[in-house]
Image (cartoon, rainbow, N blue to C red; front, side):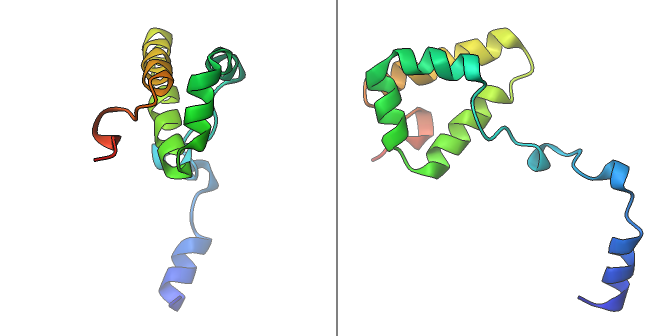
Length: 94
């Protein structure tokens, strides 16, 4: 790194670190959501067999919703698709 970059990094405000959505992505389903998901064994098995990037994206899609009702609706959609052995939306295999 150049000296100017090192200086700017040293002057950064720690209070402004970690505040953006890309820095705080949900990495896991909430335990209660995971419990609900695991109750459907076929759906959970299919989901666990998917690539890590797909799982991360769908977990983020589910957990990033602001309203509880939206998170529950998205979880329901994910469980339904997974139970059928299908990926969601544009992430379907061709």
